[in-house]
Image 1 (cartoon, rainbow, N blue to C red):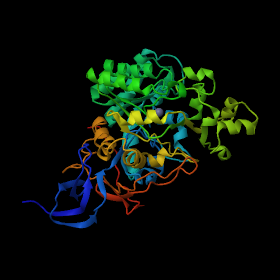
Image 2 (image 1 turned 180 degrees about the vertical axis):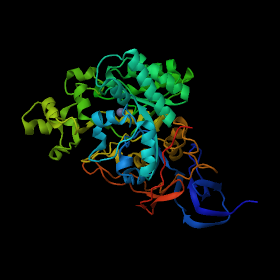
Image 3 (image 1 turned 180 degrees about the horizontal axis):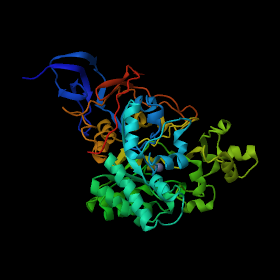
Image 4 (image 1 turned 120 degrees about the vertical axis):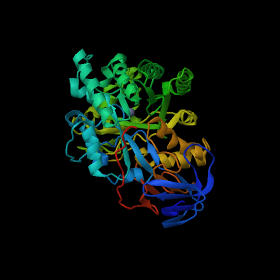
Length: 498
Ligand SMILES: [Zn+2]
């Protein structure tokens, strides 16, 4: 006998189940925090949604987030929920949430103005997430830069055996707490000074635990291919599955090189390695202005740096906590106003270590963005930086932009494929059990959107705008967005590996 009473039934939707399969018309029933049935649903529900003309998909998974602290300080997480994100992976680019003293001392930039109580290790961080009850689910990566800083400060040398052992211990602590893997940020201090072997050794522990290795590679410009080879080597020698973060070719001189980097990924996969990537759908990137300076991006040396040489006209200040008057201006403009060289102007903007400035860099080719997106190994990650000022619009718009602009308007990929890249595919890669698919017994993380109107609306001058076309979002069976408005419900959970 089946129980035909449900908490929620969504009727007549066009169902994209997250697997990449063609959509079909049907209903979906929810009981508690799980999907009870998909297809034709008989029976009554406490609550029904008529979704005729609308698409129903698994909640989107943002595999590349920097919201480690935002989920604690702004738990409603409107900028993600309002674009349909129901789960995100924090701790990317080598910047993890623990050990807390190292975070506070060196990565405080991501706290913004927030004051949050500290925590003990990665376990303590996930407990803090549990207490904060954010509106979405949070999975985490252990950050190599953070653990390296905790063990050996900002030193630019190789670790001693004891230090390597201490880092390995921190990786183990994180994995035991439930981290889904380890991330590196090899253009940042202090990770950019590490040898490949240091990472391979740490990634072995990750592989044994079944986690993955995600990397902001050492170089995304002239030495992009070497960097991809390094990531693949780390996967091959450690046994860890590899995720190349925000795959791109930065700087005019490197445009077009993504065709070769994608070929390297294909070759690695043919060899039997699990190598995939993620991407945000814009030709501009965004990072700490300090990293732009560390990589010599304002001078000819930049060509050998990890970021590429960038023209001062193409570097926009997104956030400058101590100098909001600089926000929205380019380094070229500020150089004139301040009467300094572009590089010195950037140093002045970023003069306070505890209030790091964030820059937006226009450095990619649209053709490359599309080549990467079309490739079947690419999933979607926002890389949004949740700070004040004028953040890169990817923070608010990534998922709607892929669906509305790239799938619907350009036809670059089908809607079901686009949905798959942000649901079933990342859930599988990051080991998020029972998420990312619409089937009975999976968690009821759901998005109902209008496939004819969904689109990002933010711009570089007005980035904090919610997308159009998102009607309803459910997290663990609870409505967080209803009729396009945040309900202030906070049903999110920390997700632990396995
Ligand atoms: Zn990164």
